[in-house]
Image (cartoon, rainbow, N blue to C red; front, side, top):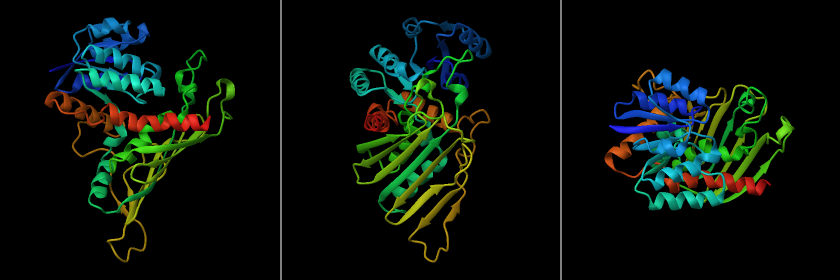
Length: 339
């Protein structure tokens, strides 16, 4: 059984729940700077080892650590664990700067521990179905794709006493991996050039929070990808949107709520006489998942299982450090362009 630890108990509570329930894992330690929150989570999930200091937390006999802290800690915490040979599952984005990307890659290369980025959206069932259709040549060669992640979260931009959180300062395009990751995964592509623009700060200017940011990328395989992200503007409910155009057809999701997926719209040249796009009933979650495995449409559970499996079988992580940077670096570059 793999001994797990989770640092960061905001988003990290999803992982506390997951690794408490997965039969292959035992949650043995948690770590957070907020002592009250840590005590509350420990009591609710029966965790006996609670740490406020990360270095001491790494001494708890862990096989792997989940880094679910704010982005500024992703690389320092991941590197510290990897230097001890501890496996790492790290939240997005992988890094906050190009310098950190280099540090992370070097640490992963020299470590006995495995590194995986926790990009859950590539595990949605409909994305996996799209990958299969692309591999079968249903839409031909991908020539253009776009995605949007728009999520109004003003309540997460500040603490209860009005102080800004990390989200108030994070360039929206840094959070491109939920959009770019699934698109690049369809054909194993990667970006080679990036251009970016943003709207400036109009909705919430107190801390210079960028309203919306767009990245335009050219890939190694010659496709063009456009990604739009925004988290402070008034648009309810939040949503993800994906669209892919190939030389022989296209795929897209419907627009609407944050998780509208259940219908894929498709058009294939190989099917003659179609008067309109076909509607394919493709959901987020695979059939047969446990009732408690509903986080982000079943993607959290499926991603966690993939990570655990690579540790048990000693196989490469599905999103290793190189793929993590393929998904993350274009956002960093697009923001440099925008600035």
